[in-house]
Length: 161
Ligand code: SF4
Ligand code: SF4
Image (cartoon, rainbow, N blue to C red):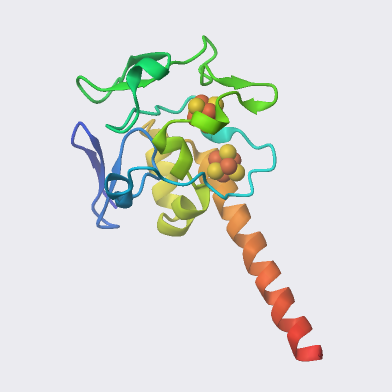
């Protein structure tokens, strides 16, 4: 499987998939959604998405509302600033300190969709390219597995009734 970079994202030829920079799991529906709802991922304290990611600002995000820095891969674009250790500037010990006004890409981030769309080998390649954190893929994979187990449990209890 071949992965190549076009300056704005990664093209996975084997998967016939284009993954834009900023959030590896950004969906194409973003452009159509002016005010996306907050994600409903059961993060339960996980903050992997906020560690070293390049969260670019979308047109609907007001740059003056955020601390930003130039995006490393997209000319002219801005991303949320980082602490010296690479974490998002807004991440604190309680999680996102701007949860109610987090930028658009944070609102749609869902590691489960990433794990559902990309197999482990592809995820590993993107990780080695520095385009994705394999830990995020792994977390999505775990959540999907948990959902599957819960679904099976419901079916079983249904049969018993
Ligand atoms: S990796 Fe998944 S569970 Fe962790 S913060 Fe991101 S979306 Fe939430
Ligand atoms: S703005 Fe909040 S949700 Fe988005 S990366 Fe930073 S800490 Fe995480």
